[in-house]
Image (tube, rainbow, N blue to C red; front, side, top):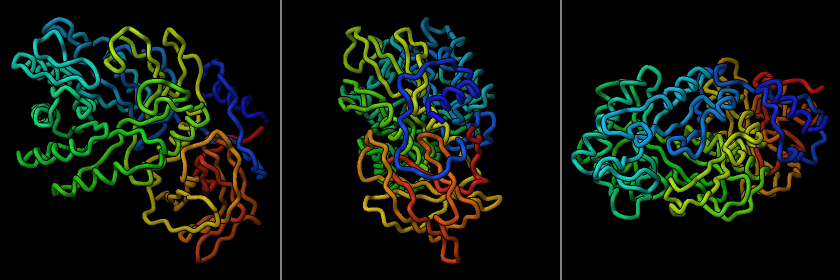
Length: 485
């Protein structure tokens, strides 16, 4: 069975896409195990709960168009979707709110089974001292602008509180370079906004920072919040990050240490991270020759590396983004600057051109790893592999079915897809009918009884294929499988 023919069939069955692919999904070579089939996707409406979210950012500045990619949202299987509420798009005339664009998005996302989380952003230039309308711009600062900010935020929560209960205050304030977004000002903005949310929606969650990378900004923010007795207004700290090696989760360790320093364990959420699918001159991970293969590998490893630290994650992003003069990234010179981090490739008119391999790869993760499959802490293993291996174990509560994720993590993803064979011992492993899943291709392989041994000392797998993209050793009952034809 050709991989490309499978993908076309899967697209027709699950999404009715009728889209062409830019390239065939490159096969994984060196695996001689019998093929059982493919992982069956699960739409968001079929998942009760999970920690996965997908990014649908920049709609507020028209760098993406929701109606063009909305049919791909629910079938992806991510349970959350990150949206920027766009004060400047909502209020173009003082005191007059235009909600139609956001109503359509929120209502459709909810209807598809996803849980929108809304970000209060950015400023609004119709007010003197209203702040800027893009990334890195300053906050509203004048009394008139702050009062208008309060009114808009209040109206936003009142309008959507029956459908939305997760709110994020601003985006990457630490990237401001002109002194118009100091930490003290962010503290003031956060407190006034979070206090309002608590009043209108007592059980709503308010998330702070959406930190780009400056740990000192987070440290100062938490210190000032503590000094003012307001740490209880923070339900989570969100952070971003685009390391060359997707397995670099050092921001998690640093932020946990900063949180502990200030006397409180604050939950962390990865709010924005993802790789491009081709070379681009601008934005995070620029000037690197990514391909659609390394894009898929990077995203998969990033997803599972955070999952292995119990950090909910938002993958950036669903659609490629068309940055224009409305963005201060690269200069407001009217030149189109593409950000190719989407799971969907776009045409010049921002419609969807085709579905990238990373979409199906992420779909496989979202289908298997929901909240019924928690991580097993300190899942001990050993291996004869000659490269560094990342490995984490998960166990389903209702029946004990296990899923183990592993891959080579000692270098950024490469285009080559050949596997190495190694023995892997799982000291807490317990399997009755294990299968092997190549997440990137969604392929499920049988593991002949001769290739593994189960005993009181755990499970041993011999000659197991491993490469620089996640593989899963999974109890067959834990994976929905569409049989090979």
